[in-house]
Length: 292
Image: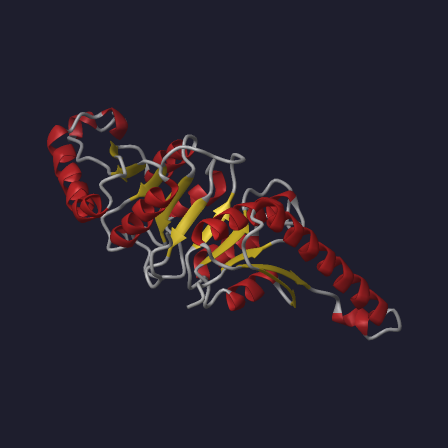
């Protein structure tokens, strides 16, 4: 049976090339086909004039050149994998969401050609990260990152698939797993001016650690070869995960946070991580199977 594809979107920029390189290595590791996709648009108003056909031909030629270069780069990095490339007419986010419906994983760069240079996350990456029906990796941060796989766990039902995905990725990469649980302690009124991170709460810490260990127990038995480190912090989840990403090769989070009722949205911690992480970020949607 043919493995589901790893789908990667590229636009020929440095970020798009980094996404292709990451996706090619991932497809090789999974022994899965790689599908490279580039979407392009043209001004339909211009196409009504005599120059329209020439404009369309140029746009098509540029698109074909982009996917050809991406295909060559992927083949150089992972010569044994099956590679398919496609150009799509239309908006990039809509096209990627459409072709990734049966994918094992969708990979995008952190930002593309459009928008403002100061933006840390492009609109296409933002949309596919929050709306895809398969796991999504946003490639950003350091080149060729090494270190543990980091899992950001909260107290919601999303914690279970995040942990499963993270430990399977750690096992596949022969890497340790770091589990980060951020929580705000109950602070007495007389300590109201003290930072939560500076408050010593051994009893609450013990409760939180026990809850994480309970989640970990079946997966630790299944993957005894994966060293696991549990980090409890009173810092905000976003700050803790961004800090952990500085020494990680992958950060895994769920598709929602506290107070978020729509499945199509990430919580604030996930949104900040996508803007500031120093390594690739994998978003696990609750309706998808783990991405190992």
